[in-house]
Length: 560
View 1: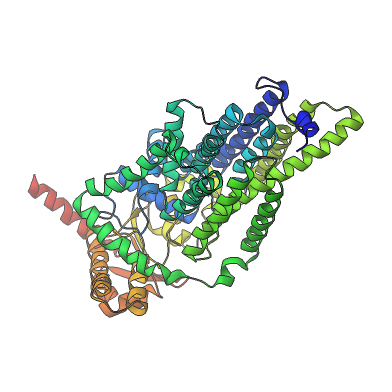
View 2: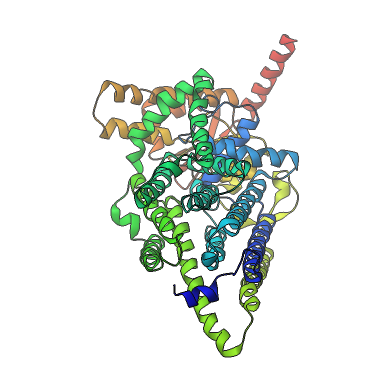
C-alpha cells in the first residue's frame, strides 16, 4: 500500500472518527445477525441437526445424573456433551424445549465470538488494517447463515470458540497483544474448549502457531497467558478421565477409543466423493481462490497469511477423517469465506474511494451502509421465513407437551406417525440403526427417552469392520468379542425398560443381530406392527406393559 493510500484509508488516531465509525458499524452488524438468528430459534423451536440433537440428548441425560459410557454409550468424546449441558439446564430453568434452548445457545456463541473479535481487533489492531476488520467479523457471522441444517456441529462450534483466540494470537505475534490478564485467560479458555472438542482440531491450531514460529524465527510468544490457559484446558480435559468413575474410564479409554480408532474407516469414501459433489467442490474452489488472492494481499494486512494457513491446514482434518461428510469441512468453508469477505471488502473500499472523488460522498455513508444492508436483508429473510412458516403444514407442539406450532418439515420423519400414535412425551423407544439417523434429531425433538444405554448401533459396525478388515491379533479379537456383550445389553435394557417401540434396521444391524436370535429371545413381549424405510417396527404388547407395571407396584409395596 502506498503512503497516499494509507493516508486515505487508515484512521489518523485511535479516537479518529472513521475508526470509531468502523468499530460501531461492526458491532451493529453483529447485533443484526444475532437478532435474526434469535428470531429463527423462535420461529423454529424444533429445528436441529442429527449430530447436535444426539449430543444435546446426551447432555440432557447427564443433567439427569446419567454417567457417560456407563449409563449411556456413544462413540464421541464427551466434551461436547458437557458444553451442551448449558442449553440443557437452560431448557429446564426457563421451560423451553431443549432444541430451542440449543438454538439460543448457538446464537449466543456466534455473538460472543464476533463481539470478542471486534473488541480485540479495534482495541489493538493496526490502524492501517482497520478496513479489513469489519469484513473479517462479517465472515464469522455470515458463514453460519449457510449452515441452516449443520448449524451447531462441533466444527461450527470450534470455529466460533477458536476465532477470538486466533485474533489474540495474531495480535500477540504482531507485538500488539497488550490486554488485561483476565481477558487473555478468558479467551484462552474459550479457545481451548474449541480445540478440545475433537482431536483433529489441534492440527490447524498447532500448524498456525508453527507458521508464526517459522516466519518470525522466535519461540518466546508461544508461552503467554492465553496459550497457558488454552493448554490447561486440554490438560484438565485429559485429566478428568482419570478422576471419572472407574467404569467410565475403562469403557471409554479401554474400549470405545481403541475400537473407534481401528474401526472408524468403516465409513470411508473415495477421494472423488470428498470433493466432487457440487457443495464440496464449491468449498474447494472458494478456498483455492481466496488463498491465492490473499497471497497478493499479504502486505495490506498481516491477518491474511495466518488465516490462509488456518484455512489450508483445516483440510488436513477433513482428509484424515476421509468421510466426505460436508460438516467436517466447515472450518475450511468458514475461514475461506472470511478471506473472501476481506478481499471483497477491500475491493469495495477502493471502488468507493473513486466514487468519493467523483461525487464528494461521506465516508460515514459508506461505512454505515454495511449494517443497514444487513438489516435490510435480515428483515427480508425473516419475512420470507415467516411467510413460509405460516403457509406450511404445522406441527402442534401440544402433542409433545409444549404450546404453539412449528413447521412440520422441521420435525418431518417417516416414523413420525407411528411414533406419535404409540408413545407419549417421556416414553422410551429403541432405535437400532447403523447411524445417528433416523433416531436423531427425531427422538430429541419429541422428548422421548432412550430405551437402552446404547444411543445407537454405530459401535456394532465398528466392531464388524475390525473383524473383517483388521489383522486378527489378540488385541483386535478382544475388541470384537465385545459384540455379544453389547447385543446382550440391548436385550437386557429392552426387557427391563419395556420401551414402547423397538425399531430395528434390517441391514446391516439386522445382520449383526441374526446370529444371536435377538428378536425371538428379547422381543417376546413385542409384536411387529410395520416396516418403514427398511426398519421393522415392534410395539410392546399393552397387556405385557400392564403386567410389568403391576409387578413393579407389587415390588414397591413389598419393599415398603
